[in-house]
Amino acid sequence: MLHGHMDKTYYAVCQGELEGSGTIDAPIRRRENAGIRREVGEGGQRSVTHWKVLCCRDGMTLLEIDLETGRTHQIRTHFADVMNMPLAGDEMYGGTTELIDRQALHCGRVSFNHPVTGQPFELHSPLPEDMMKLPPCAEYYGNKI
Image (tube, rainbow, N blue to C red; front, side, top):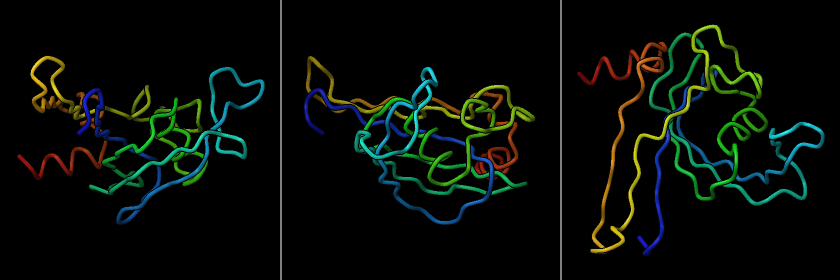
């Protein structure tokens, strides 16, 4: 890891069921006349998202996500526009708030080199309670306890 570089691992629940793992490499740009909403489209900035399925349940998928680039709304945009599977709770990108009233997205791990010592440093954060209640999270983490 380079000095000043930060790695993050995200966890998200999308609507729909996926299998396996993959990479989304699609440019992201601002959507005209849509405030802060982004979209995949020509002329956008290169954006690369790596994803891996952890669990599917009741029409939803728990994903582990690593970003090669870090664009505004990158995960939300890639899953809504490319995969046609918006995040649960993400009304801006087409998700439903039936089971969660915010986007089901959480940064679970951050790693970087300590700015003074230069030693690797890693922080972990468990999924919030509202995400743990979603069917694929409850199944996946329930089996880990």
